[in-house]
Image 1 (cartoon, rainbow, N blue to C red):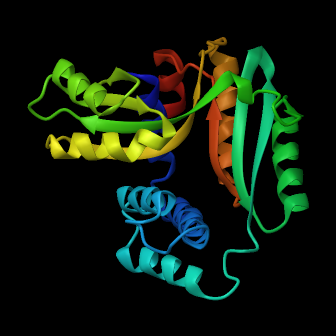
Image 2 (image 1 turned 120 degrees about the vertical axis):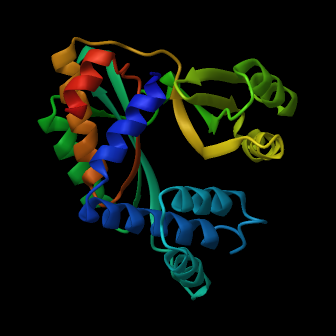
Length: 249
């Protein structure tokens, strides 16, 4: 099982409760509203909004919730009070974290993030401290259906994909950020089931600490993701089978 599959499985188990789903829907709605305010409130004309809506649908967010989030963006001033901020952190064992947040109170958010990182044994760094360890890329997860991995790779490469890897029951395709939609459309046209399509921070190299340290870092990431203002957390942690078994038990 690839790193993507492991992280996805952990997050699905974590988000199974009604409370977690409600928090996730709130974060998704916030992203939809802000995305709609930063461009046209039309997913077909606004790439960021299109991705936000796709992700919301993938998480089974009710259609009414999605439409209300878009409508809120059309109201004067709604969505303008949220700032998008990124924090970077060093954890023991050379693990780096990139934390993306959306906040209406920077002081509150940085305080909560710093406190969580410090309690986990890490340190919040300056801008650029660890960002160089990651690449901003498009990530598409597809289920193969009747196509082989080689056939999927050919479709993806012809459409502009830069990299791909096996993902247990499917494949993960990587693209340049600006090519994400084009590659996604090509895969869909080839009648492949696209499970998700997102812009992500992909680590250039993965680090494998000892299992106990890895479990602690995963628990820290979960605490960060539980913060209301935090949208995404990326790391260069390699999730081994042993660690996956521990955190999924």
